[in-house]
Figure (cartoon, rainbow, N blue to C red):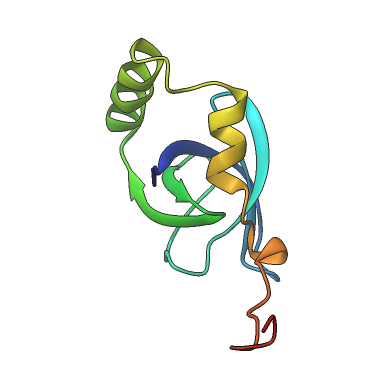
Length: 99
């Protein structure tokens, strides 16, 4: 299942377009390459290590509340949201290499 999780931006490294975010208390490094104008304190939707867009604090809290109610939000879920962080992308394999 693909799931984007709201996260609050804690710090930004503008030189690398990376941010440290809090995914319901779990800190992760993500890429801001896909979203312009993100500032510290903003909420973003994070999927596979990338911020997809900014969302309001109210939308973030409501989404987190619903995810908690469903039992879909814990440290493992937060890990999954950033599991394929930009510096950890799987390398493409050459077709037929395993044959």
